[in-house]
Image (cartoon, rainbow, N blue to C red; front, top):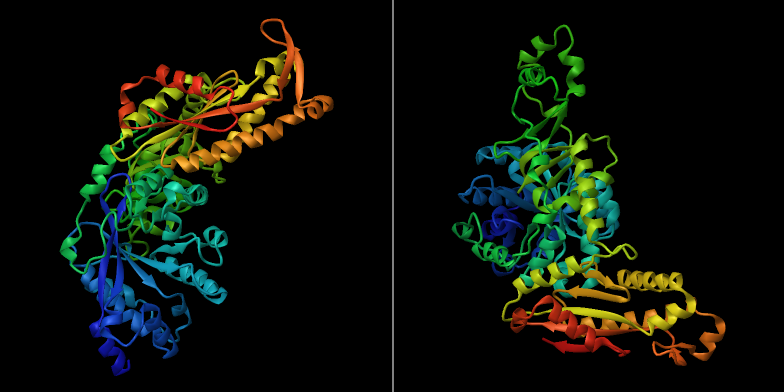
Length: 578
């Protein structure tokens, strides 16, 4: 290597930024971030450094020395089972005459195994670099390393890369995480990506989490890990990296939402005894012999992390052969069981029943059930029959409480929503509710019949589901009264949603009227006092209520009474502060 590069590399250092479990606040990994580039060298930034190394045809050699430096410093972090995320330049695939196995040697020198490191490959770059990225992923996964895709969502290949990559982890770019609590488009994008990643067995990291509100939003969407200034800024001092982060644990305790009704009943989880990843082939054969009713076995590592599953059918040909057991005892033939491990369909216990059932139903393989983990640690297995029972139980719960016409949640869930929201109110935050009430609905029903009235209710239901953010709580009080609950939105945003819904309903509902009534702009019928008079075409009133800390004294009936009274006969949203 050129002397100038040797001198440059001596001046560079690495800072580490923690990546933590979203639902526990415990550390999972650190990302190595290059430092001192602008201060100690003539380069303008990190990208400039790697561009020059690539132009000098020394990118691999430079990266290998940086890799060595990062791993050596990472080893000083005294936390058991912590992982290292190390960034690779996609162009390294073009380097010629690269000796194989160098990373494995560096890890071995520092007493680490291959599972200690994730290679982070960026989705950014040209189309040529995107093709290189696919090749890189295949190469490193084939060598037994874990892969994380960085900057996901802002590159060229996008969903195609997600589909083909089979990466272990994807990292949502900070662009999508910043202000995600107030941006419905970002929520929609990220929640879709998270669901797809989980379906394909990938975990998700949210990068750049800086506020409590962003953290709560990511947590509610099912993000597995978070990284950002809210947890800790990158630090050059390894002693500042800790096993858990008290501020995140504090936020978890403050977020008292009761998810127990949608959690997985532990009675449905079977405790199938797992095998360690270093188990010999001979002991695997003995396992199936001693457990004749088990057709598969979960595989875990030293830390009980689920690594995959081995199916008896895949080893039956050897185990039942004449010399199968003898061969299995021969360590020179096969020392462990890694070659038989297949990916396991799994869910985190915190994801709840709905997502568990959804993931299983979306899985196209002939799976006999789904594995359950807690912070990646193996907890057990739910078989198909138990999943069917869970699904039936969940459907009964939903049907019991939903409105039979609109299929929306009813009064019980509305009361629960208000009760839970009250618990989350602090001095510095509020939440908002909308109450929608049709104007002149009885005259419409009397003139056009109840069937058309039901159609009007269904039209409004579809409008709410179409135009409101995914995390909105939409409910049907009964008749022509609807309820919507928001969290993490400003009053101005709530007002715009309400106004848009009113305008859309007024426009859409005209399809239910006869032509002459549309031209007149009214219908003529008898009122409740048996007096014939004109009634305007259907519209919807809306009251917006802002709940603050002082509202905790108010009960459900009082709040609904205030809203209903305020919403009548008003064709623009009216705000009320309780």
